[in-house]
Structures are given as C-alpha cells and as structure tokens.
Length: 440
Ligand SMILES: C[S@@+](CC[C@H](N)C(=O)[O-])C[C@H]1O[C@@H](n2cnc3c(N)ncnc32)[C@H](O)[C@@H]1O
Image 1: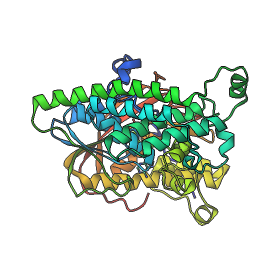
Image 2: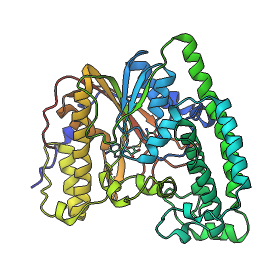
Image 3: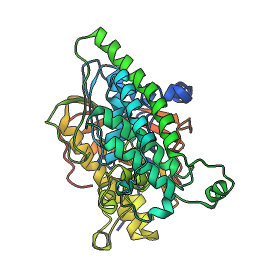
C-alpha cells in the first residue's frame, strides 16, 4: 500500500538552500582536470579533481584523515596527497584499486625510464610463440584479431616477468590503457561493443593494430605524468619530513575496515541505481590483467547493480519510511517489480554505507557526497534527495548543499550512459549522532 507524499515533502524545502558553484567549476577543462596522474587511466563517472579539492579546502586541514568509500580511480586520494592529507580509499572494482594505487604512488622517473627501455627492447626482440599468455576471454575472437592477441601476449609476458612492485604496476596500467584501443570495440562505446561503424573504419584501413607501438607511445606519455607526481612528492618532502600516506583498504563501502572514529572527513561520488555497468566497462582490461574470474559474482556485489533474482524480489514488499522513495517505488512497481527492487536495493546499500561512514567518522566529522539525479526506466530518480533523507535518518544533518552544472569536459568516458544528469549536488552531511536506521 503506497501513501502519496505531500506536496510539501516534494518541494524539498527541508534541504539547505543550494549554493551554485557552476561558474567556479565550469572554468576547468582539458589539462586542468587531468594534471599530475589524474589522467593515468580511463574510468567512468570520474569527478573532476576540483570537486574533492573544494571539499578538502572547506572541511579539512593538512594532516587530517580522509576517506573515499567509493574511490573509483582515486581522484580524492590523489588530491588528498597533493593537499597533505592522509587518505583511505575503498572500491569493489579490482581495476579501480590498481589505477588508484598507481595514480597515488610516486616512483622515481629515472628508475621507471630505465625499466621501460629494458622492457621495450625485450618486447621488440621477442619472436617466440607466446600464446600461452593469452587469457581466457569469453568470445575472444570477437573482441581481438589474432595478430593483436599475439602482440598483447608478448607485452604481457615481459611485464609479468618483472619483479612485483610499484614499477611493475605502473607498466600494468600502461598495458591496460591500450587494451580497449587494440580491441575490435568501438572507441566511443562506454561498454565494449563491436559496431558496424568500427568495422567500416577497419575495412577502410583507418584503425591501427600495432599494439607494440601503441604500448611504446603510452609508456612515453605516462612517464611524463609519473614525473609530475614525483616532483610533487619531492616538493611535499621539502616542506615537511613526513609525506602524507595513501591507503587502499578493503573493497566494500558497506563494510569498512577501519576503527570507530578514525576519520575526519569522507568525500565520495557514489554509484547510482543501474546507471553505469562498472564491471562490463573494463572487462577486457580485467581479463588481460588476470583481475576477473567471475564477472557475474563481482557485478552482484556492486552497489547499484541491475542484477536481481526472482527469488529476491518475488517475496519483497516495497515498504519504506522515506516518502520520496515510497512514491518512486510505487511508480516503478507498476512498470516492473524487478526494477523497483533494484532501486530499493541500491538505496538500502547506501543506507549501509551511511551507517559505516558514521561509525568511522570522528564525533563532528563530515561526509561530502557528490550526487545528482538520474533516470531509470524513464522514471526520474531524485537520488540526491533520497540520499539526503537516508543520511539524516542515519545520524547526519545536511548542513550545506552546493550545486553545479555537469558538463562533458575532456574526460574520454561520458559521465552518464543513457541516464541523463544535468546538475550535480554536493551534500555536506555533519555527523550528529550514532546511526539508528535499521531498515529503509
Ligand atoms: C562514481 S564512481 C567513483 C568515481 C571516482 N570519484 C573517480 O573520480 O574515479 C563509483 C564507484 O563505486 C564503486 N563501487 C560500487 N559498489 C561498491 C561497493 N560495494 N564498495 C565499494 N565501491 C563500490 C564502483 O566500482 C565505482 O568505482
């Protein structure tokens, strides 16, 4: 039984008056949003570094402990490092964890350059049959040409034979960065897809399949980024003896491996209900890096997954205390119960995250959440408003709210697939009490 929420609750006048940051954030484009190692690897739905920087500036000081429970490619972690904060990051996605690690680990560029010379000459000189290095990829021939498979296997062999550590991880990220470009997938698709447009380009000879040259160029470019990070870390060392620490901990934002009251500030941009299929976007890279053995299992653990089983949603009753969510579930259940359940599950997982973040934050700690609205099954989801309600129920107060227009900057993966987002909100939650919300 659904109760229609009152007009008053729909007006959302229980939220603070939004402060518009569009002008301030809109000026950052191109290199300004990919400085240092921010652009080391593609990642969907990244936020621009100026957003965590704004939160760090406004709500923390050097030496503080910062947490991003949905860190993705580690934008918050790198900004924290640059601004001399210690950071902790969590992500369910194994490739995200590797990208974040490489993004935030300064490595001596002379060391990287000498390893890269050795590595590239070994790859160039190798004429062996390296097919044993080709991973098991479902439907492999659909995704890669035979000559590409051979070249990628040779590159992989020599990276995997390096000593384990920061240097090897750097080359793994360089390798990962070329996988999608060397595949048969359309470069513009978010999820790998072999399109007729791409086939036509191949037939016209307008695509390059020279993986070794591509790898060489990629290494060269990423060495420049690594050099900038190294310079930043030297500057930080000159200012103070102790460098900030970056820690990638655990992998689930609903079960955080930190003690109570350890964190000063949390900053995140969470996933949305059924918006970006994080596992599929990078599945080809993950197969090559040996990071994916069970796609369905990993996808089932992602917050916002569109995977739901009949045994889960058939007995489920769409009940909740949150008025906006109640109205939304009512609308969705009329279309399809499964869709309503997917949305409910998403918000329930976010409730678990609020409870965990509340636990690890110090008494007056803050949680900055960057979130907008999205569309699912043609239904508009006021994600930020529902999350604000859940946060309040979980012991927080929304003290400030900022808004800004989302523009597609240089980022090579669009922020949103088919679900539109035009405005993002930064909700600033202040921790007020221990959480009490045991169910939505
Ligand atoms: C919007 S993205 C974050 C992007 C990030 N701000 C950046 O700049 O790269 C959301 C992230 O949440 C992660 N995620 C989904 N479910 C998760 C879970 N249960 N625990 C931790 N991370 C999860 C996804 O893998 C994805 O990387």
